[in-house]
Amino acid sequence: MAIGRPAEGATEVQRAPRARMTGAQRRLQLIEVARGLFAERGFEGTSIEEIAQRAGVSKPIVYEHFGGKEGLYAVVVDREMETLLEMVTASLSKNRSLYRIQQVALALLTYMEERTDGFRILVRGDSTAATGETATYSSLLNDAVSQVEHILAGDFERRGFDPALAPLYAQALVGMVSSTAQWWLDVREPSKEVVAAHLVNLCWNGLTRLDPSPDLVGPDYVEPRERTTAEDS
Image 1 (cartoon, rainbow, N blue to C red):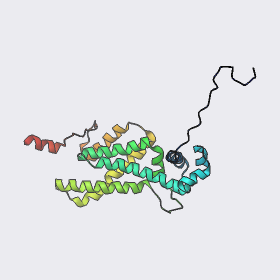
Image 2: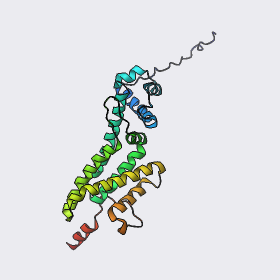
Image 3: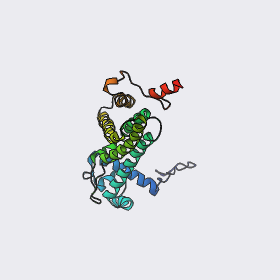
Image 4: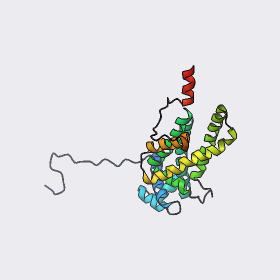
């Protein structure tokens, strides 16, 4: 029997051909690879060669999908901005004021926890040579401030407060949540739920009415003023 040949009657094992990625799958893979590198090294410190090598493809494949590093970076940033803005917007669109503030804090903390690389890219705020524009975390916060301002103005009018002060309060609320969330990203403790509860505690009660043991509220939470009105009726 010749060496290297299967024994008589034995079935030769056939290796299945390696499955090729579709164009959409390859594009998504390159975006994920680039996101990690951009978060680690920034736009200038990342090269097409490194992206291609880590993805296991040739450089022309990267150029074919994105036209170059600038195009790929722009796609990564756009996806992160869209993801975070959708999470924040969804938390602002329904439920009562206290619950909305809580959900904004949780949305931001959850995004940081689940997409740390993406958040670091937004905070880094590298500019691209192709557009000369800088996509930063601060630009997204400005969008959040505008939405919070609109919500607060409506709440202020209903409560008899001056709605002209809504922009000031919106800046304060978003700024406080953002700064605390960035601090939490490095320490990762206590849990994001505890952080959100304490943020809401400060936002809602103020320093003079702090609850010593705040907890998260549910979507059916009734604010004290509304509860009193319901009981009186």
